[in-house]
Image (cartoon, rainbow, N blue to C red; front, side):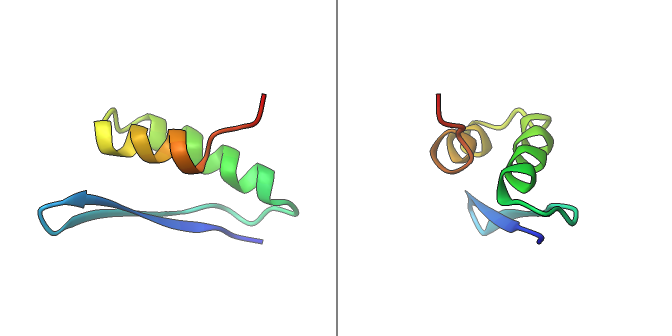
Length: 56
């Protein structure tokens, strides 16, 4: 399984990222979350909190 996401950054800008092949969605989400964390962009951080947040 692969998961791809597109984050709308506004002003006709977006960021698309795709995970590697994994057996489960949790691994895909973790990889995407870790990769997106490197951007240090408020809109990307908001997306991570809303969509890729892990349950406590």
